[in-house]
Image: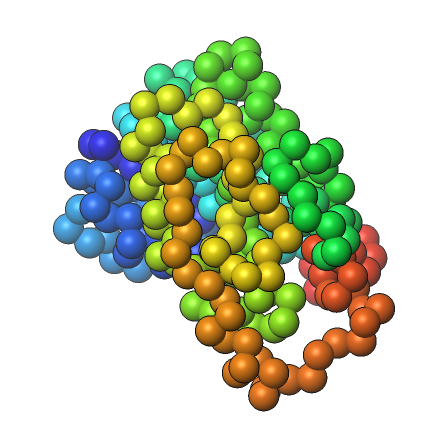
Length: 266
């Protein structure tokens, strides 16, 4: 590609992928509302509020691909979630439609299906069961991507990211962990396949304790290589396992299922 846009580039995952995706395009365009530091040799930095339609229009112009991490990445008040994850994703898709429909990696979340139980193994055809306003916003994004594909032909990889960190932070993440290397491999396949469509993909590594079945997207050719089992002994030594009826043991969305509605961002 000539230009790849990464939104949410100042966040934890965005800043990590900024380093790891540089080989995919001649120029990496980075966007966030927070400080992104100085641009590297093949980077350009365009701060942008995703709720600003005109700014998003300019942001997407001349891009051949988009990796969309932008928006609120955890639970928040309705106003914040709405502006970042609903208004923002609509603005992004409208801008993409107007600028040649570059292929999009949409960072959805396991919280779109968080009320499924951990003793259920699910594929990408199950109905959403969001566990939070944040999860609802991701279901909206998935539906919007589907509509733009059916109506206009806009291609999107909807990636329901589990937990993408250097390693699992708790026992639940042994099932949801997505290594950075496996995520890079997935993004490479998304931009490499001749025809993408609009698949839903569970973003998790090859974990022995996985709850998610990606067999419906085997055609993509993504083969995650890492396994969270290497971290189990360390977690067992560092922390107690939660009670059997704790939400982080019962539900795939963990503690998000037990949180109330956020009325303030304090």
